[in-house]
Image 1 (cartoon, rainbow, N blue to C red):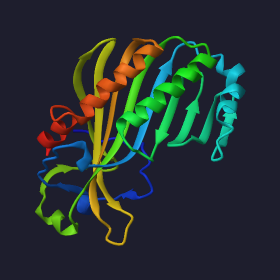
Image 2 (image 1 turned 45 degrees about the vertical axis):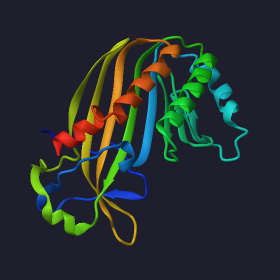
Image 3 (image 1 turned 30 degrees about the horizontal axis):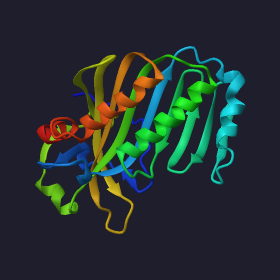
Image 4 (image 1 turned 90 degrees about the horizontal axis):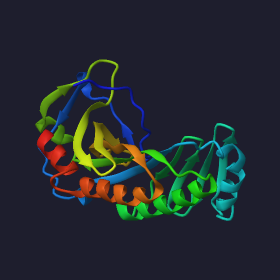
Length: 244
């Protein structure tokens, strides 16, 4: 199992740690529901087709969120725009000629994020006169908290880091879905909480996506399919439990 260079930024509450002697130690886990995990970050994205009206319509997108008191336009040019806190619950919004992307860290539920993303993406694609989408993706970072550092001594040494690569990961073949094949990538590594106790944990970085030909009306039903996979005992949770 190969590793990859780190590409995610953890919520500031957690930080990645290097395991001693270039090893990771894991315990046998049995996670029965998604609520047993600490949901730290979530990212939703659609990749669009023929989105070059962005160059003419960027200001109209900015204006849509300018009434929000927390709104901060971080970046805007012909290559794309980035808005900090465009609306309640949304941490970042990025739009360019090829995609619409949102980041969440104030997470109430998967349904909450899917509903916000679907509604706002529909409005943005209407502004840009975009009808076709060729990728739908939903990436989530979950942390499984451990009881304390003493647990580390009990773990089976199952995986060795390839020097210079982190975290460890593998591709998931989830199965076929309407309009595309549902696939995923799962990466994991040890982390430590930025609290006085320095609570250790395991980060699970799961990215579920489909590539195909979609329209905006497809987004809601596909996100619902991803939600079912993430919460099902036969889906994402089963992968974690069987692996460890």
